[in-house]
Image 1 (cartoon, rainbow, N blue to C red):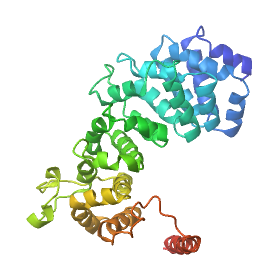
Image 2 (image 1 turned 180 degrees about the vertical axis):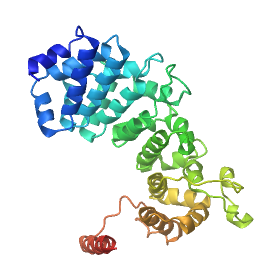
Image 3 (image 1 turned 135 degrees about the vertical axis):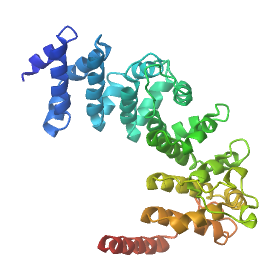
Length: 359
């Protein structure tokens, strides 16, 4: 198909069947290196596709967004969409419109655009600028509002978007803003069984936020109570003794025979990693220990059969039952490992990886 012919087919004035054919052709191009090279050779491709997101035919609008998703999987295209075409403001406006038809598709596009740190930083800067009327607080609001969209879109992929932006400190600062109550609004989704995408995205965002050690005491305080929300998905139906439950948060006691653990090992691993981060300071470790975290993790360890999760569990158990570091070394994130010790640890890890590979 000739280039000029494609642009004619992608024109808003073209027949519906012709536009659909052209969009399908472009989508096929996004899956090959040669196709991507062709699409990047002329800015009119993206301009034409984006113009069709305003088409009067619903199926053409959806196919246009799907084509943009295919393009945004490439980091160079994602950067181009954010910086050269400034499509983000209109995407966000579309998402927060409760009457929009294809919000879930647009949420997938937004998640793609925020996937790598370079694009994500530009995206956050754009949202914070005067060019964008929809701010992150509005995105969280519609994400947390039950049945916000009137066209049966669930906005679950916004969870992945939140996970992506919190890989950067700018995103974590927003989520941890104590005047916004974003963390408190996200916590209930750690046990949200209706959507693994939403649950996994939220837990990923919470884990990222746990890297901010200055906020640990606040996160663990009664104002937020992050720990019970991280532990509850890891708890099972085991009957615990009164001694085991002494000091344990009420939500973790007497769970009953029908209590099920989080089935996804990747999500279990993220939950454990979050708790490990909360143990990186002396104050955090004390609170986590006092809440009888070890009991929940001990029971989890008995049933866990995923190797990576077991490694994370064993690391957490060491933090919970090991001796406290010497004075001046209480913050595990600021401790400098001597070069010779670091080399030795790297050799041990390399040997471990070889053994795992041989198995």
